[in-house]
Length: 138
Image (cartoon, rainbow, N blue to C red; front, side):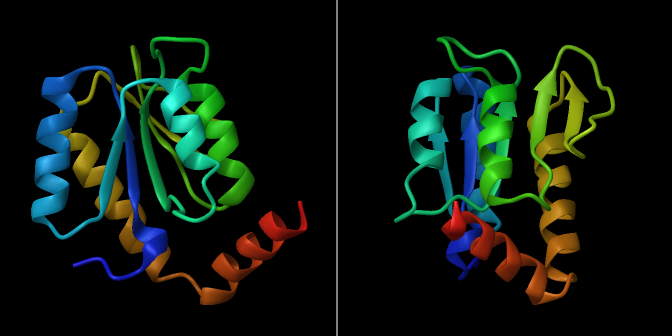
């Protein structure tokens, strides 16, 4: 089970069948997962420093004024070295280093999140501490 509060995963998707399956699988694997169905809900969650978000999956197109690209930018303010997993109409590269998947399945998203978390765990702890210091200075 995930014991680090910075491993909390935020799932932002307006398709209940998709996010319910993804959440079920991630929780079964021991992850702390929260969800939002709109960009506005997710934006508030990303700004809640009392309950930090460690990882973000979002659909690029969301209902409301805040889309997945805005959420990715907000997420990077606190986690400059971590990739956001974004579901878009087509897979493509990202200048910010995000992982943009074309119409992924819940299983594909889960696998990418797991790989990203495992890669991050193998990095030196100083990189994460530097990210927290930058966030506090802002």
